[in-house]
Image (cartoon, rainbow over all chains, first blue to last red; front, side):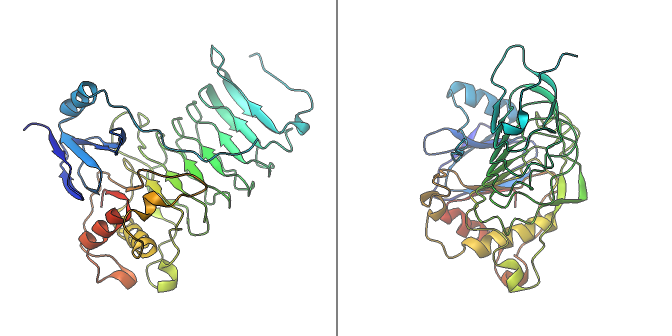
Length: 76
Length: 263
């Protein structure tokens, strides 16, 4: 099966153990990923599901990068 | 082995190991440091971070992306420490039982922490500035892939399910990222955790977690992640929220702004 993209207001997506998934934020950066899932993801962000190889290619084809998690500032 | 020593270590308040090439290896020993506040020792080849137990002045500890082994550094004696980054090491021991009381960000993901249901995730209820608790991807190959299976703690230290007083506040309102995907959390602890999150955020408006800054930081992708190979076998929450279905809780938290993954 080809890669699947979920873009509903709230997505509820089951990821089987043979699949991987990435979650894309509003800037189209990856906010998270699941390797060989076995999970259900409920999110208002875009979810892309495919085999591990399909997801790897999707990341390359779309030049995706991981979003940097923010850090609070701490004075020296 | 050559070593680096410093003059008057008892007066030093900040140490930064920089980005030298080749990277620095060996052990950092802070025995003679008394007032150090910030320690930047990330992205080296350090194999140890030692003799810091007496230090009460840390505000930040960066030891991520090294080769540390053993337990996750416990800097809870430094009550004002706000950031602890120990992710991407070779840590194979346990989490601290307590965190610094002012902790804002705690990361210890991409290690190989002890896989045991007796190994506890600390009670987070008192850390009212904590925005990120991230211990994702614990495995023998340090999170590169599933390897021989995911490891890490299996149980919440704060079960807080039998009384309303126990559930309420178990997860502080400051929490924006709880990431333990690729770990070992038990299905029962997932049920408790979801109940705790639901209790804290159930009455918040749409996108509240995204729109409401914590520690002057806005989190564009709040998340609660617990996927692992142990599955999730419950249909309803527990304790005072036992009548709430898992689906209702997940949708409500998603509406508040959280991505819910692994329940």
